Length: 118
Length: 110
Image 1 (cartoon, rainbow over the protein chains, first blue to last red):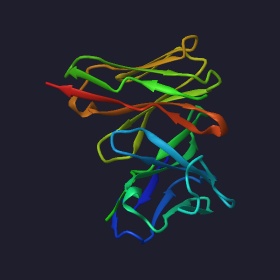
Image 2 (cartoon, each protein chain N blue to C red):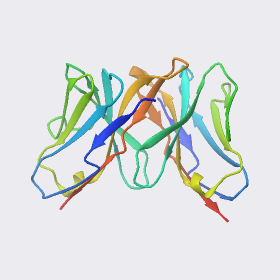
Image 3 (cartoon, rainbow over the protein chains, first blue to last red):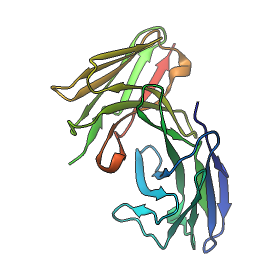
Image 4 (tube, each protein chain N blue to C red):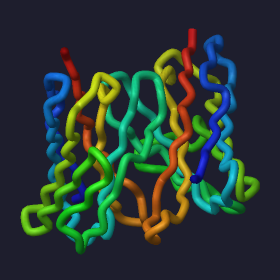
C-alpha cells in the first residue's frame, strides 16, 4: 500500500531558529500533499495544501511567511517553520493522496513530527 | 459549513463491542473515512465507505452509514487492548480536503 515517510519524527530547537520537516511519498507520486497541525488532545487542523510545482494554498489564519511549504517534486514536500517560537510547538503531520483499490481518494499519513521550541 | 462531530470518549471492556458514532454535514461527500491514531503517531486509515453504501464490513470492523441522517458509525467487534486509540471520522469537503471530527478516545479495560 501507499506509504508516506515523514522526517524528523522529533525535533527540539531554540527559539528563533528555523526547522524543516520533510514529507515523502515512498511508492507513489503525490501531486498534492496536505500539512496538518495537531495540538494535544485535539483534532487535526489543516494548515495548507501543497501542490507540486506551484504555490501552496494556505488555510485561513495560517501565516504563509511563518510556515513555508515547498513541493518541488512529485514525491517530496517540505514544511519549514521559520523563526520558531514556543507557541509553534506542536505535532505536525503530513499526508498525501493516493487512489485506493476501489477508486476512492485515500489520504495516507506520515507518522508525524513533534516540534518542541525552547 | 462543513462540520464533523463525534463523542469524545468511549470506555469498553475487553471482548465487548465498541461503537463509535459520527455525524457530518456535507451531504455531497462521496466517501467517508475512519482513521485510527495511537499515542504519538500519525493517522492510520482503518476503512472507508462509499456514500451509496449502507454498510461495509472488514474483519472486526463494521461501518454503518445512514445518509439520510448523515450519521456514520464504526463498530469494533471483540475489542482488544490494542484497539485503545483515538478514532477520527472524516468526510471529504470542498477542494477534496478531508474534514476531521474531534476524535473519539477509546479506552479498553480488562
